[in-house]
Image (cartoon, rainbow, N blue to C red; front, side, top):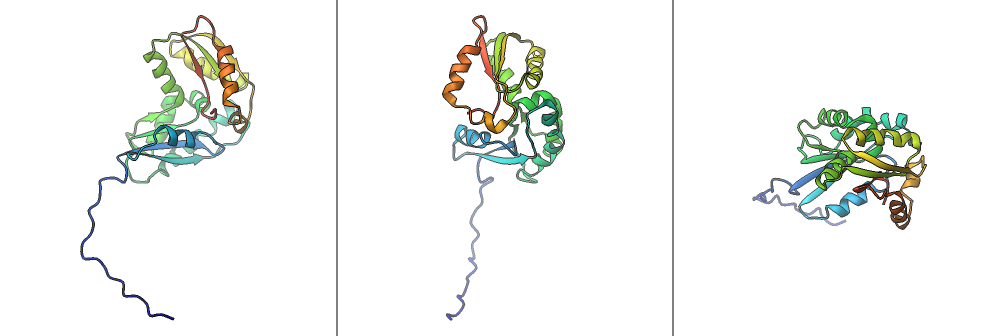
Length: 208
């Protein structure tokens, strides 16, 4: 057996950057989510931005009741993302749960673990985007059942949009939603768009 090497402690400590990456984005996703993580990594592909993910418990079927059950896990999920370090934003990546739980409630739950962090939800971002485009009358397409789609209609109506048409596909399992072929979504989107609508909102972060 060879002798143990003499390990030398370097006399100079290398300088440290303020952060490993310039911007930190937290992402809270469902335990069953196949799509959000690769989508975000692709969207923000950069040596300046890091996406840090926490998964929270969720069980199908996708119903308003099951979606609402995620609310108590949001604070713990946010706390797991780079504990004791500030984030530049946190996104809760579930459109249907966001409209069931509520943007304000999600923000409060996340900020209980990460005070002051900007919180984004998919429908909140959708509303801001539609208003930036000047859209007033919209069509909506979701992969959900009629029951799970109703809170989505109420959310957008509550933000002042006229809903010209609303189409849902009747899926109850978000893992199946993630397997819908992108090309078929394009065809479905064309069919779901009412002639009088200014824009189409396609719901669900499970979709590709």
